Length: 108
Image (cartoon, rainbow, N blue to C red; front, side, top):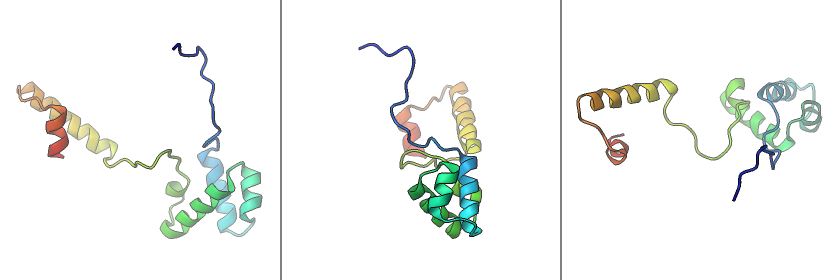
């Protein structure tokens, strides 16, 4: 089976931008427009906008409410923690005490 030369997107999932979602959430929260109008005006799905407004009302964090993410799995470690773990593993390897994937998985 050959891979196509030019990738062609099959779905339109998350074709909206985070900036558009922020603006739409702000419009709904400030009461200037409803869900349907804001979703059409800023080209974001209405159901997603409703979910994000609900999330914003709980957390009061516009950045978090408008952030994109596909899938149900969320990251556990921050970039800084991942970097620190990589450095630690490299130090162990330099001391000839390398960890296998299984060893590392169980020590977390």
